[in-house]
Image 1 (cartoon, one colour):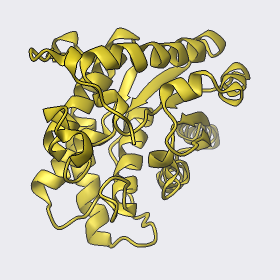
Image 2: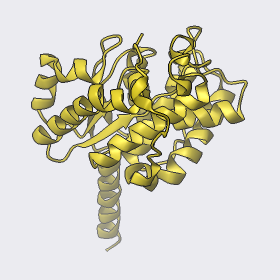
Image 3: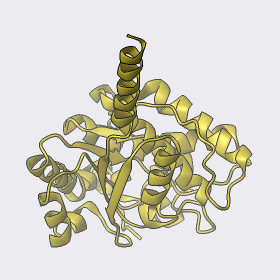
Image 4: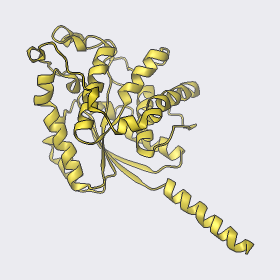
Length: 277
């Protein structure tokens, strides 16, 4: 009798381990914001440290826009091969923050095309929009043409609004990386997330992004000793706490974006046109 009970306990344990380690296949479609510091590998390593199996592939040519990807035969072929559990869509650093007229002409339809294609060939897929962040000091080139590009805060807010809008409209999710960046910059100014070009992420910024994706894909808090090269244990702990506060504590919010988040600008936006760098 004792032997039989022990046998069932062992089987139950093995089953729980197998479930927790069920492989998740992820395709990142983006550009240098994903490629720098190899975000997909950071996510895989972070997941492994917490007994999760997340395997990533990526297509990340520098400066690529949603339109670029929608017209890329390699992207289309990857989506059509199927078997993706998650497809991550990331736009060019400025385009999702474009003025409404330009956003709806140049960004929205191509993001929708990619989202639809992913779902057509992967019936159980969840599309995750990768909410990015504003430039450290805003975009000085385009600030004179469009005020929301003038500061990190206003550019980040514009990105957040439109990434959430697309996630809501397409019945997809958003990985709120930009929101975690705003939280950290607002509360832990000693942690530098922007690299020297004031745009791309440092290793700390990419690790924070990996934390956000991990929680969205596993429904778990980040609690790990995994430490990427170039980071301190204290930084890792602070970034994990920040991600858990923004992502895990509001995970249902990020999975069910309300259209009420969309606050339409009332300032004749049709006169503004942004030239992406």
